[in-house]
Amino acid sequence: MSMFLGIDASASGLTAERLRMDVISNNIANANTTRTERGGAYHRRYVVFMPREKELESFEQMLKRATGFRKTSGEGVRAVAIAEDPEQGPLVYDPSHPDANEEGYVEKPNVNIVTEMVDMITASRAYEANATVINSAKAMAMKALDIGSAK
Image (cartoon, rainbow, N blue to C red):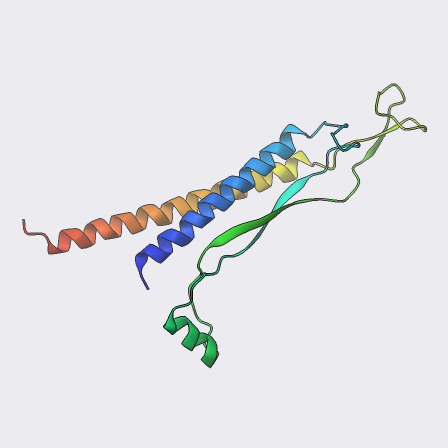
């Protein structure tokens, strides 16, 4: 296994976590939005990830798949969708609000700031972990180059 595969997997993680942080930031920014372009309150969004697979299989990978051997390293992650949470937000009684319904209730966004902040922290930590992997691989490559050099 090449060390570049590890760097590639971590780079995909960096991209995915950056997208996740952008979506979380958007949720926080719209935590009080009661009217959207589609009508109704803002609904929380989240990123759906799935494992990334190589487009071309090597002979070794085909052999492992054919023999049922599944101990392979990960190949990274990719975002496949930004989904919307269909759950209705809380209804608040405020008959003077311009978005109130006939009974005087306003649907608030289903965004929980505490949940979003926890998600932001986990995304940030995952981003940092992937950056650390890339820096460690870079340091190992530099040390490997130093082994062969004459001083």
